[in-house]
Image 1 (cartoon, rainbow, N blue to C red):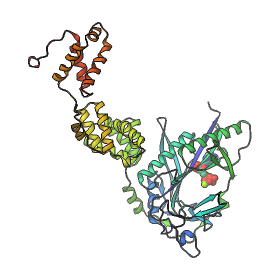
Image 2: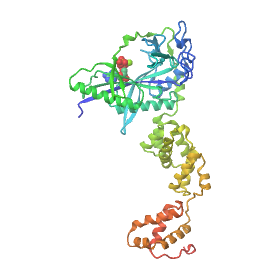
Image 3: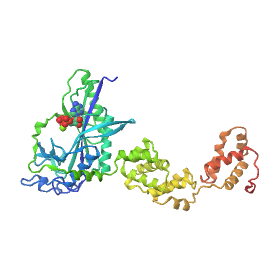
Image 4: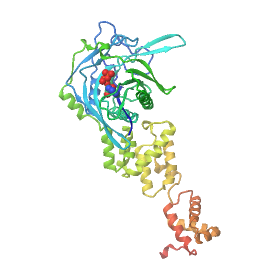
Length: 487
Ligand code: ADP
Ligand code: MG
């Protein structure tokens, strides 16, 4: 048994895809000229009042419902005070003791096992601006375009035990956010950010150990690497009976280590109080129920449906539901041609492989679901072999053409006429007496040679199953003249 157990809780920030900011009218667009997306509220000019963006609330309710939270009828915006140049008001508007969503949770799958991770709360808040430090010019610049962009903060229970579980939880959250269409989930660009809290305690101990918070992890890999590092660091300290200091640390990927950033700050330090500029947020029963009805099918629901409806195993169901657009593509293709296993296989191997190679994602997939279904139909109806299908697929991917058109234009139809194949076989048998003799002496491996010859002659178009059975038959004994009329 392991001597220690790690305990992990995550605080995840997700930028909401609203057009305008959470309390102001400026746009939330990314990549614009610095400080062009501002207004008196965003700049924190005195005397300006914030007005809550209804769509941001709507998105947060969606997320709350999708993660099985209770939606609070009354929640309250509070001021969280701290000083930083990217925060012009001197406080961030957030929710504190009365958040919008509480007591939820989601299931993750790790190593084929399901595990429930509790969600303590989800609240709404505003993002801060960005400080840009220029060493060359020896100045620091402030860009307030991001200030006031709506965020949800999703706080988990300390329910995770390994870095792998934390990674799975993050991925699952991202998938839900993307299915709901409320966040693009782009970690590199900062639309999804994670602070990881981790402590280590002796196995069997009920009390939680002293936690360390690792700030601003902007990729799944960093979350996992930083947690693994931090777990070993804390384990080593416990082993030496040294004290673990409660603090905030940063992940340094160059060094592959976390380092201390500051000692922990406590809630009192922020001087939270309800924002007098904003009324309590009241969300009526009707609003919640209407939102619930409008929820799309969620990732785990599609996952289960794919398994039940199409007989897929976990592996395929997971790959095909990772992105909503892929799940939709699959549904469409199977609706046209009901060959779920084969279509699942084509999407996850050939299609994903090609997209990956070209650096494309599903939204820019050149092969329509109709065309993929048509390709699998041609295979299933023995019009083309699986091997030729790969050639056809290649051209479909490059040109977007239909498989039928390609097969016709390039004369790729499978040869399934026994008379034609037998004629070829007999010719090959006549021209390769040595190999025939070897085969008849019991060297059955020679069959491959003959199959190869037929395929060469037909440019791979002969029906492989037919070639095999006819070859076996013709190679058995002295070749009789084939006369189809006598059969
Ligand atoms: P703080 O007051 O420091 O912000 P919270 O109680 O709000 O702490 O918890 C923040 C996050 O840290 C939550 O995700 C929670 O699950 C997690 N957490 C709390 N205590 C521990 C602990 N001892 N070890 C690991 N994670 C913890
Ligand atoms: Mg906290």
